[in-house]
Length: 419
Ligand code: ATP
Ligand code: MG
Image 1 (cartoon, rainbow, N blue to C red):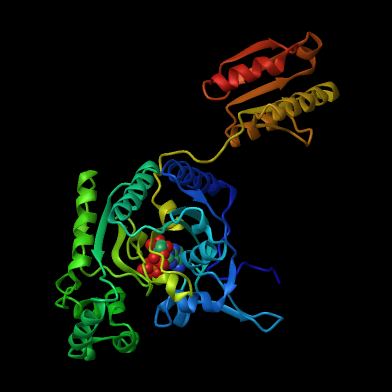
Image 2 (cartoon, helix red, strand yellow; image 1 turned 180 degrees about the vertical axis):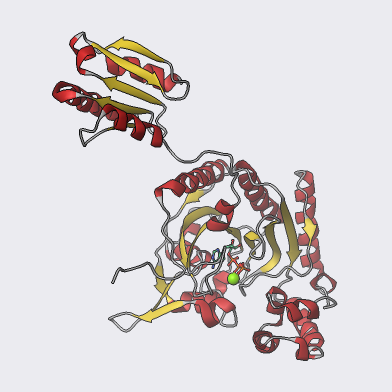
């Protein structure tokens, strides 16, 4: 039987990879310009890092983690997100000892056991950026500005930035109680999961995708009516900084994040072109995470972009597939030898050149050049070679010219690069 990939795990094929490389390259350029450095973290961590960091009463920890016991009897988990690992690394390597402020980004696969569907996979990629060590609202706005700038640079349109505040340890418990009371009165309307959430973590009911639950939240009390003066001040300043930068946003008092560790600022960017799974990216502040994982009291803020969802939004017009810059067609023994020599020299010059390996007819070689969408074709015919000439054909406008074989690599390089 033919072996297939696991459900929810995708191959990213060469004809799509151009988009991935473009997105990753753009992220690197922009984030580094904003003073961020890359960090690479392991794909496996001790299960506790996530159960403590993300919180026991979250969807991820309750039912989405890929957890197993290794041969040494340790409980390990494939990372469902990157923030907890980045925080662990910051503490473990005492990155704060040189400078408490760390601006980090990372990209790679995450694993969650969810029901696979369009825009939702079991292995999916995220691009993460985090700032550790700054509680000032300036940085909340800065991170959001960087995110919006990045999404704009990759060419996304129809986006909406939504922001909210989630309060802190001081004020959220009171809001939680209020929510509990409110939803208890509506418990008949809630799905099974939300019945449970009602006791463990009522804020998460806002995140539920079941219709009756969505109705139940309509008149729920708003967090903004319960936050303490410090959280209010922080939120007002975030809004001021965003406004100063000319960024449009929408206040969404129903916006919560699925992870427990979030405090104060929460944000999401949604796309009206995405359908049901409409969040391209989400993030927020998490001033309790570091203490949850047993570390110092370090504030943090960051976001994670879902790369598959982002890529599904890229412009259909833009060309991402790389075609050969030159196809070298040859005839006869001497022609093939010369073709081989020229192609190798071009490769060393970084020119994407392709040739025929099968000794096909000229017609079929040209068909392949067409199919591969080569920009130019170089034709090494026996007769022409004898005269020290070759034919260069522009595959787009079909014009062709004879050029001398002597010094051909430089001539081609100039033509192709200047094109
Ligand atoms: P959702 O509400 O869609 O489940 P989330 O709140 O679980 O998202 P985060 O944990 O904040 O998402 O992850 C950030 C981003 O990662 C999301 O906005 C989304 O683009 C992407 N993402 C999350 N889960 C998946 C998945 N299973 N498959 C593909 N992308 C995902
Ligand atoms: Mg989720």
